[in-house]
Amino acid sequence: MAGRMVEDDLFDSILLAEERFRGEGYQEGFEKGTRRGLQDGRRHGAVHGARLSCEMSFYYGFAVTWKCLLRHSTDAKSRKRVKALETLLGLIQSSPIDDPQSEKLRDDMDKLRAKFRQVCSMLSVPADFKDYIRVAEGTSF
Amino acid sequence: MKEALSLVQRLNAHPDSRCWFVSWSPNGALLASCGGDKAIRIWGREGDSWICKSVLQDGHQRTVRKVAWSPCGNYLASASFDATTCIWKKKNDDFESLTVLEGHENEVKCVAWAPSGNLLATCSRDKSVWVWEVDEEDEYECVTVVNSHTQDVKHIVWHPTQELLASASYDNNICLYKEEDDDWECRATLQGHTSTVWSLCFDATGQRLASCSDDRTVRIWKEYPAESGQGESIYLSWKCICTLSGYHGRTVYDVSWCRLTGALATACGDDAVRVFKDDETTNPDEPVFSLAAQVNKAHSQDVNCVSWHPKEAGLLASCSDNGEIAIWRFQEDK
Image (cartoon, rainbow over all chains, first blue to last red; front, side, top):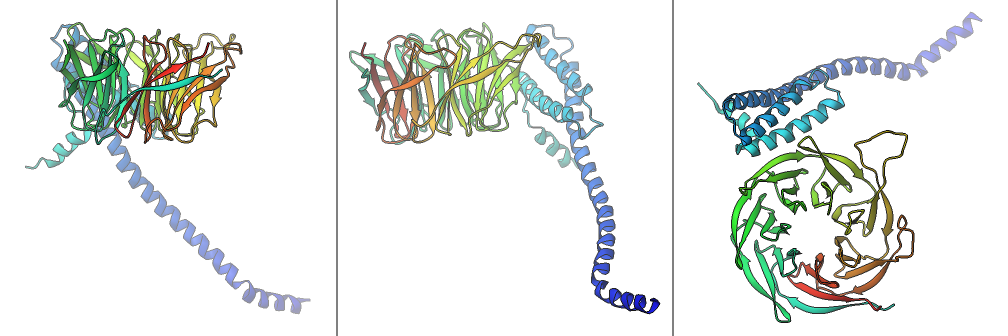
């Protein structure tokens, strides 16, 4: 009885060696891949998050500044512009920026970009956000 | 019942270029055309024939894709691939550039005036629809930018009586917009076409909407009031009540619904112009349209646009990639 089991184990360890090594290799690779994925994901998230909040903060600063510039204007046109700026600020404040997976965030960003384009048209200022960013990068001391 | 579409006149409107669009002025006295030669031409009737009354040359830097008359007939708006929309004011027999509306990121595909004359809508390859307001001093201001489509927006059209806007897109959908507190929002998305929707047209009362597509069909849509028991919904419910398929050999680029006779004309990439009529005896919720007339070689290239005359029943204008405009007469045997 005992003799037969030793024989089986002997052959098993040879025949199943490839499968065992493959299994161990897979496990090792899976763990390494998970760690690597987490690192890549975190880096990607950081970049994406920075881009998103950079854009949103830009609109915020833009709207607050223009509201300030128009605070003494009482004509109908300026009032319409202030109303549009207030809608822009409202969208920013109600946006779930802390939840990157949120559908609402995606919709809000679309609405925000559209509102920004409309406000720029009303104020007759260029609307390309990328232009502003490019200018900032060009600054040197 | 034999009905015929006969040629009245051919105009070499935009030589060596494409003629993209034709539009009759509200009183029908003038026809505006625009093309790949960056120009807009105004045609008027002299005796029995149409002649070129003026050429608006320097308004745009690229192709002029569409032109639209204001409801009063004193203004003309032109949408161009140069990303701008130009507003022209009629001064006697000529037009002068009043203002240029900027804002779209790329090619403007269409411009349309609301029946009230106070609002203007534009749409573009940048996937957005812009609504502009005009005040008494001829100043234009953007009131809304809407991004309901996921692709190039090809055409927009206003409802004849309500403040309702419809748009057609490369994303195969039609969107309907209504105003809510100064902002225009998409209230319905009409799905059904299996390829780019190129053009739209409401019937005389605005109860039905015709759409045409790269999928070689024309669809008729009708509004249905929201089901009772669901309370008041801000969303609109439109259903497709008829599909005309098997008639067009290629992409259908334009559809025009005659406000006087109810006839439906189509412009097709197979170089033909077709006219359909609905059988008045059938159920209005399930109309049956039949082909009333067809001209196979209406032009030597793709037909880009068809437009019914607003006052003279049966008069139809079409234009083509070969730079020509053709005027037709549709005669029904009574």
